[in-house]
Amino acid sequence: MPGELHGLLQRCRAEDAPAWEHFAAWVKTRSRTILGAVDKLSAADREDAMADTLTGLITVVRRGEISGASNAEIDAYVCRALRNRALNLLRGRTRRHEVVAVASEVPLLHPAENWAMEQVADETPSQAAQAMAAEQLGRAEKFILSWPPEDRYLFIAKVNGVSARLIQQTLERSPFECFCAVTSVDTRYHRLRKRLIDHMRETEP
Image (cartoon, rainbow, N blue to C red; front, side, top):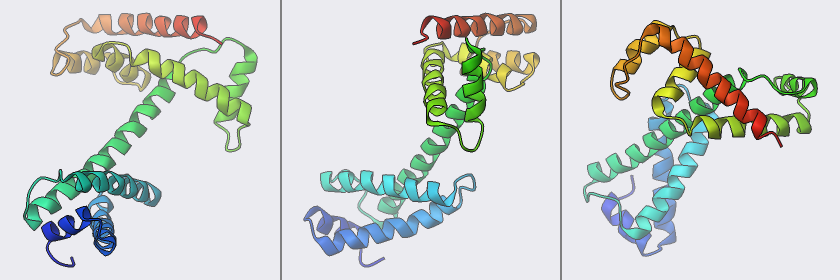
């Protein structure tokens, strides 16, 4: 690291171009160490996470909002920003996969639409099929996210094959603290599934 971090940040705030270059190079070096430890990220994911973090850090540096004055404190701040960005990326991907799984449970209205969804799973789907699937997934995601957390968990867990007993036990613990009989899990799931199907039909363009 060329010089003390605190002094480097001061030069960056003074819009010293070489200082910004040194800062960017240092963040990239730290990202290789921090993000390299996250095995679920691809090389492209790591590049995206690093670039997004660096963009955010530039704003924070210009505002003088990085907490701490020592090298260790500033390094900890930057490493935490990198980890948080990586976690957000993984959470977003997980939620998207869950919604895809949920949407696959919803019967589409017309045979042509069923064909379109099947084509999306193909390696080279048509643009029309992609647009149709994206629109449907967007409506399903928006509606599911409007549900209470315990309903979202129950529905997505059932779609992913989690047993009713485990779902019931999980709902009883924090953060849900929702008590229900094992036999009620399947009943609630089918009720939620019907709500989703009805919503998709009612909001069909």
